[in-house]
Length: 75
Image (tube, rainbow, N blue to C red; front, top):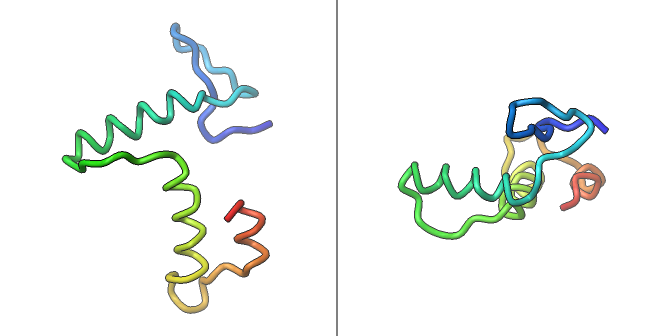
C-alpha cells in the first residue's frame, strides 16, 4: 500500500503503509473551509465524487474521462 498522505504519529514519525484516519481528513477539511470563510458541511465524499463528475462532464474537450475510468475512480 502506498498512500498519498500516510499516517503520522504524534512524534512526527511517518508510517508509509498506514493511511491517515477519516477523522484526521475531516478535521483538515473543517479547518480549511472555516479558515477560508466557507460555511457549510463538507465531507470527504464531496471531494471524491465531485472530481470524477468534473472529469466526466465538465473537463475541457480532449481531457474527458471515459465512463470506465470514472467507474475505476469510484464514481
